[in-house]
Image 1 (tube, helix red, strand yellow):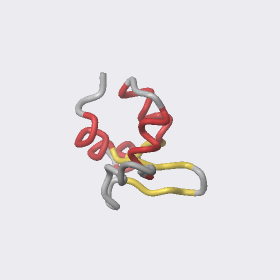
Image 2 (tube, one colour; image 1 turned 120 degrees about the horizontal axis):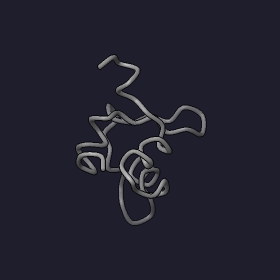
Image 3 (tube, rainbow, N blue to C red; image 1 turned 90 degrees about the vertical axis):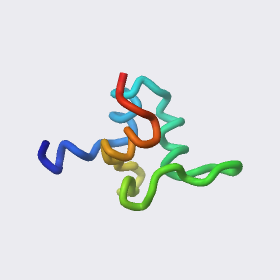
Image 4 (spheres, rainbow, N blue to C red; image 1 turned 135 degrees about the horizontal axis):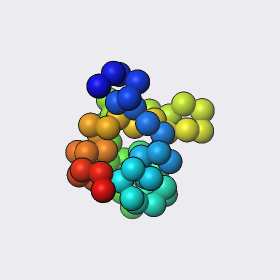
Amino acid sequence: MSKINEVMTATEAAERWGIAKVTVRQACSGYKKAPPRFTAEETRQSGSTWLITVEGMQRVFGEPK
């Protein structure tokens, strides 16, 4: 798999894993009651878009549906 295919947006990740976009975004940024679930190597924000690695999604949410 090429490097570019190892990264996706939070929206694309939510669609591929069949989960809500807000769930993925909260896993990226954390929220009042929970810290971020991804490591700095698994996600970063580019403008208002979260970018996430496939490896990070698999670690946090398991295999895609």
